Length: 132
Image (cartoon, rainbow, N blue to C red; front, side):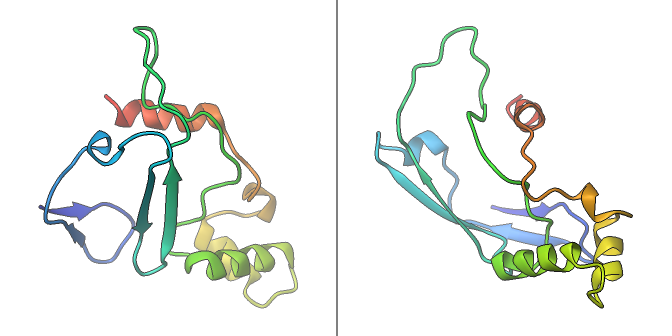
């Protein structure tokens, strides 16, 4: 499978895989760990641990986010090191890159980007649209 990856990129990015599977095909029960890398250039490595398997009721809506913390880092910010540097730059108005990073993020005030922000309702709304 080869597909276009949408996003603010100057060229179409493609991803490919040799097979397609559903998450349920990978999960063998509680304690299963799934690892994946999002954005190979920035190396956002994720580990998902299945702590508990629940039976969905008729009124339940899936997918859903039960909990989380922190804002999603901006795309192409340079991985964990780049994200940490971005946070330092935004916290220091005297940093020579401060104005450039505000422009890059499309914001006027560094307070508009809250690294600690987490909006569970907004995340569930995005998941609801994906799960249709």
